[in-house]
Image (tube, rainbow, N blue to C red; front, side):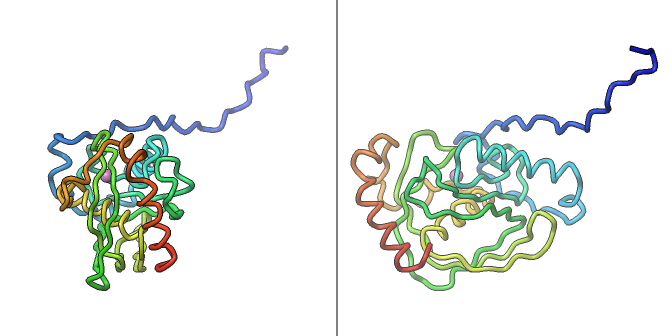
Length: 207
Ligand code: NI
């Protein structure tokens, strides 16, 4: 080998996307309203990297969604995705959606009982009444406006995530406290009946 041999240049490597720590109930960051994100901030490489980390953390934790304040960043940003999720086998799929500064508007007064859990509330589930039809307005991760409607069980997932950005946890909205249960008890006593309710919702609303 001659001395002029050079090593091939390696392509710049992405820093590894370690999952971020997830705030657990009791952390004050979960209880404040997250602040709005400016367009300049949203388009910065730092913020784009943060969104990638938020998504990677949601995937790692097998969540159906994750809000920025759940990873200690109190800004109006959340990610939602359901893709054959083993944590929620009865949930219809939702394509990966990033919402910045989201605003939800119920399209009717109709509500349904959703059985919810949360990555920030260890081993607890409970029934939460949620609107069945919503208009969603937000920016996407690049700052383009989003305006769409969601219905059925999927609408419950959107309300859960946007609640986080308001400083609310699903526990605050549980009306029947006797519904509170561990994941194990949910699987044992509640899941068959809840699955049937979800099937009826999906049959009615398509999602
Ligand atoms: Ni949650």
